[in-house]
Length: 109
Length: 117
Image (spheres, rainbow over the protein chains, first blue to last red):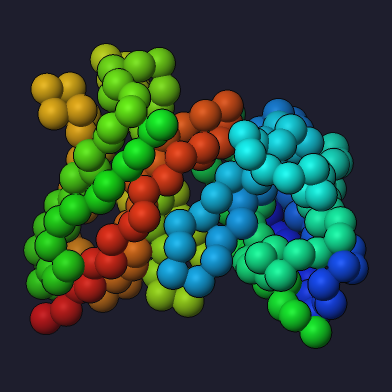
């Protein structure tokens, strides 16, 4: 089973700054199978990015995804107050198994 | 607009069976999409339980495979989950989802299930 490790665990930033979140896979994966979600307290996760870099419907362009192989990045430019949340990466592998990272919390500094 | 709504008992006794349903609106359960269940223990991360395709294969998380069953009811446009022999470790918010391109693109609001003796 491929393990996804996210870093940092918590990111403290101010509105207007840029957040850079990392998701590292324990072995090389296809970028087609890598997605990112945002989750706010008491809410269901929301799909942000799929295929490592494609924004889901309705997601602002300040959210961008990149990476390949084992290292993937979610970048949030110009943080808005509503962007402070937990972000989670997800992998779908050839065994038809979805795996999630443990999450990165982006908090207001 | 795709909408999903989970429902079921909020409290299940240890060693019993957890059963949840998910009403789907705005999209046919018999489409080419897979449908999944995901859970999240309080204060912890997400765990995918399995997925089903109407008229097609079902895939389960190996860590739960012997206890979990996921199915669809096309007459009700509904997804269901059963998890047997539950323990307190199965206490979680349970979400149903529609699968997109190797991702989970629509989620229900989730329902909390507590396992207790």
